[in-house]
Image (cartoon, rainbow, N blue to C red; front, side, top):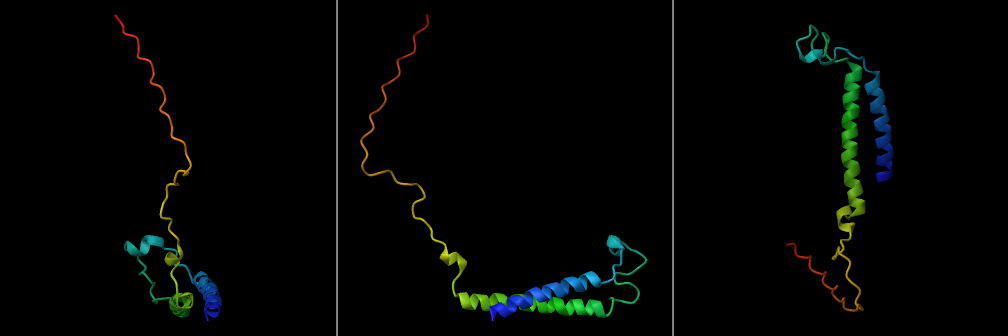
Length: 114
């Protein structure tokens, strides 16, 4: 099931990309928000079929994404976080068979100045 949904996800993503690229650009940029003489969607409202088609394909994309996540989680049954193994000691321990370290001789005292 997840293989089918994954393939469907790629197909929907391609269709959604093409649908967005085929829409007419209003080319007013941020002027729509600053009181341009055109309204946000123009005089005739949204661009009709392509806007509605893009919205429907976008909804299918979101629903498929949620379903893909749900079914993948049901088949996997484990979280990735549960698979991470944590070491108890980060600092490596010293070897067991070591000889005691003798302290270094003290350095000579500095000469006294008159």
